[in-house]
Length: 363
Image 1 (spheres, helix red, strand yellow):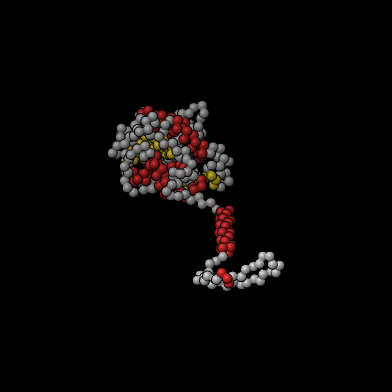
Image 2: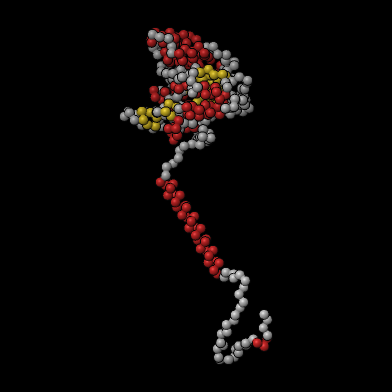
């Protein structure tokens, strides 16, 4: 309401008397607005409260992280391919990245020992798992008790299993060394009084009868037995020394590549295992004070040999079943369980189809 100009009280600035304060009554607004200072004060407290809450959460998480245990269980979807492995995947012809050897019928020959040679009719045998996943025709010529390296410099009748080592088996189907197979059968029977074990007899017969023009892939998988026997892992003066692990591998690879250039070779390394020490306690095969040569030394020189000879290498020691996750995939100290064998099969198939276009059955 507008006041009359004459009714306004004027203050005489020249007067010595202090003016009386006059209370002015104002109409109350319909909705009282908060004062500006009070609103800013509340925002400060809210902001400080949020900072305190964030700091509290960070401190709690740091405490939990410090007292917790690392979860080493890998993700099932990527555990095989995201670890620090020494894989060396090459096509059939390393000079041509587009080279492939694909036909309607995939044929795979397996050479090796250990579990690959055990229970060959079992669905959980590694070769049979690969057959199920790929639909391939397989020839499992793995021999239990055999080794990559030879024990003697040349074959001796007193130790016929030298004739079943990797290099000597390669001479059977690469240069037609059938005299050797006759000697092995004869000497084993003379020494043991019985015929060769079933897996060894099947291997020799199969290697002598395969149509190698139809063979697509040779898979080489020798496990940790050369390490347990402490066969020399390599020879700096002779890279093809058949009495060493890497040398026997190279000598065999050279024979196969020369005789069967259209066959893709895929070498699988041993997995991590535990090994019994002199006190009867199981220790990591990576430990340097258990055996003079460590298992990783064999794996490294196996990888070097494959690399230098343009052969595919699948690292199972660092890239499949390695120390941090070994308990999940091992039964006991060194026996790969069914889940682990499935993992090894998938790793092989990954390498197999890295430069090929095989059509596998749907799982």
